[in-house]
View (cartoon, rainbow, N blue to C red):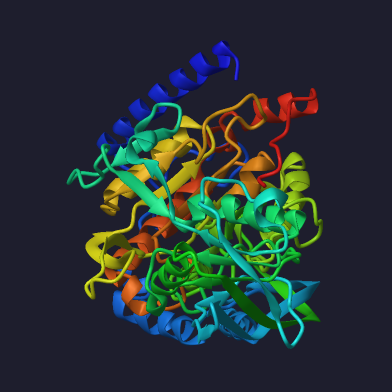
Length: 550
């Protein structure tokens, strides 16, 4: 990024913060405010803040989430995801005048039926329990693959020199970044942490931070001629059943599984003993061509220009992803308002293939959301799209790595009694940042960080390429985007159910983001767009696009 653009972005950030502070002192725009740039003025009785009685209570949200929790892990194209989609469709049937449509995709779905690991030390063989197969790992023959074992530290690359012809024991710890990074002026717009619970001297942990490291390991192991990979997590196996990552939808060319900390320690000790050590890995899996749909539900407003709200339908547990639970409630609420209270149309999009990222192109990520973002990119230039709001992992509670209560190796995840840090990435627009800031504070969404991006700025268009989740493809396609996501350490683990959600927090988020949609309906497009028109001009002039994520 040029020095001039750095200065401009710093000025924009300062302006945004001042605007956000001002928003706290000025009441929300009255219903009788003048119409904005081609939008009809909302009627006097139109609400900005929704009536809590018109949306599900915390208890009702728990009941709705219970259905999701009962489905367990929902990889793309699995029956469990299809059942969630059917539930969403049944809910949308209760939304007056919603125009519901589907876009179906054919994928080559992978599914494992069983896995087995035998450790042989000298002449003694022992069965080692497996926590989970790596999604889309290469299946073995019925007898499995047998090879000597080698332990390769996480910081050391897997190469032919150290892995060829062997089964690799590979530590796969959660990644981390210093909390301080979130406070940097080139990363965040604003931090709302009134109780000072986010310690800048500590670190933020998550498997997703090391996601690309696992992708690289699988590619490197295959290229090196490894016979298999045993990824060792720091957690006990009881917290890891069906652990699910990475989710590219890419067929990996090596068998691979996840082990818990105890099993990993047992194998590591065997390797260190100096005795001859080998393993036999069996992974039974198959592919099947299936269809998987993205659901769209449009609610007409006074203008055909629409606000798009997105959350995906595949996921791991009750919190990933419960965004659709909130969205169907929002849709019912907005559809019940008088037509005059929807200055813009609102479209609710429920993409598939978050867990099959390379949906339409093996060389590009972003799954079903990427397909929608590509379509919206074209429509934005025609004035048919106003903004995008993505919602992920609502009400998530925070888990920390703690010493194991049973004294075993590694750590266990335990709730610290706080809500998970909520990240909201926002494309550069002071009024948009101010609107989100006001909602966050009004609904006391503690531990919220408003991000410019989930990465360092670069000399690309846009300058921040990563929004940390489902918002990323919309941002990359230069759409005014608000990408909300919480990222608890339990995210990839189906063993965490309803106990991973604080439903009072989810209820506040539902109210707050519904109000935000109301606010987006009355803002002018210039206010919403911010720097987007400039970035689109830079792209048209040959500005560097965002590079592939992995």
